[in-house]
Image (tube, rainbow, N blue to C red; front, side, top):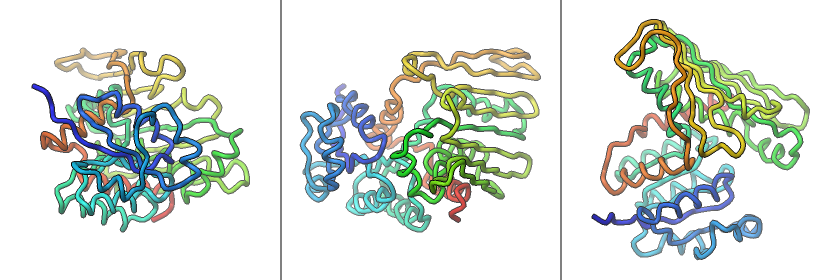
Length: 338
């Protein structure tokens, strides 16, 4: 049976993931009808408006886009700190929200957005793509099934090298947490999803050069029986190959490194999790196993397919309004903002 498509528009093209999001939406024409794009900033229109992913899609004002007949949802891809106010305006008008991240530096403003979505029974999905990484999903399931026992340690790293990119460093420096603000949320999101909201978050924010950018950070999340460390740097040479997520428990450990395959193998390489078990289970005997968990594929594809099911079929959102708030609050604490 033919599925009823969702009419969706994109608010903003300034977010660094905006064009990739549009590419993914257009790869799913059986699920989404992209009706238009709005970008009121002439600088972004001039820089990115002619990208191939926007060919054939009408550009309009935000007011015009939100007035398109039959519009049901918006993908919010504004740059910087304007993302939450834009999403709030759309939610207030009754549109489902697929919003990129992070969710701003104001917890009250983000809470207002979530409250509006909950009151109006709107889907809110934040674009933390690691939620849909097959290797990380395997680790999450291993924790939830009890394969690793009681978790006592998580070590997570989300680094890269941008030391030679002065323009990008200047852009990052507008945020109070610098690199931590932009990148740590990917990891904190998963930690909070597995272990809940931490009892305490302690940030250690450093600069490798005096240009105003916090480019090297560590956050320690404390739980009753566990500690989790999150490291972010944009000064680590070849850092993307070293991105990792390790969970250690009383019955075993699981590690994914790199989190995403670098280079041309990005979409096609099978992600391997190193699973070490003290005792066997129904799926794996005791010992160490290199488990092929599947290819990454389209970075946003799985998430957008889930968004469709949430909107059209009313399926339960695995990432609740409360989770979105708590993980963002933990991110703000890791950035030293709250």
